[in-house]
Every structure is written in structure tokens, then in C-alpha cells.
Image 1 (cartoon, rainbow, N blue to C red):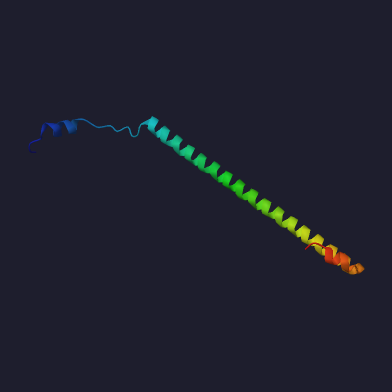
Image 2: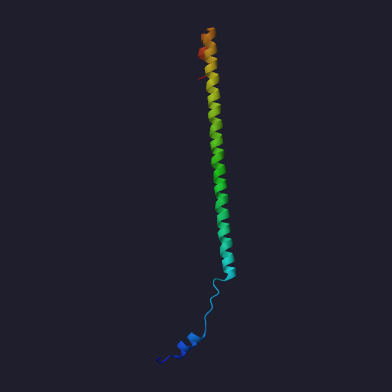
Length: 93
């Protein structure tokens, strides 16, 4: 009971309907999120491939070094068994 101003009366009579976010803006935001996640996924896959390639190459180098050392030891042992001092001393280290 009291005095109601015009804007208060109009506010009571009209209802404000909110529709929420613009559908196009929501679609663009969702698309941007999907693109970002896709970019991050591709970046992680590339980084994983690089790390895998480096690990594989390191393993190959280790195997080659091990094979060279085993061949050298085998040659030295063979030279010692047959008693060939010159061949034993000429085996590359």
C-alpha cells in the first residue's frame, strides 16, 4: 500500500525473458575449444613421436657400441688363445 511509481508498476506487469547466450556465439566458443584441444593433441603426438625416435636411436647406438666391444673382445681372446702376440697388440681398442 503506498505509492507505486510508474516504472515499478510496469516492472510488475512485464516479465523479462532471458534467452541465454547467443547460439552462434556458443557454437563458435565450442568450435574454438575443440580446435584448441585438437591442436594440443597433435602437439603431444608429435612430441611423443620425437621422443620415441630419439629413444630408438639411442638404443641402436648402444647396441652398435656393444657389438663393436664384443667383437673386439672376441678378437683379443682368439689372439691370446692361439698365442699370437702381434695380432693381440694390433687389435684396435
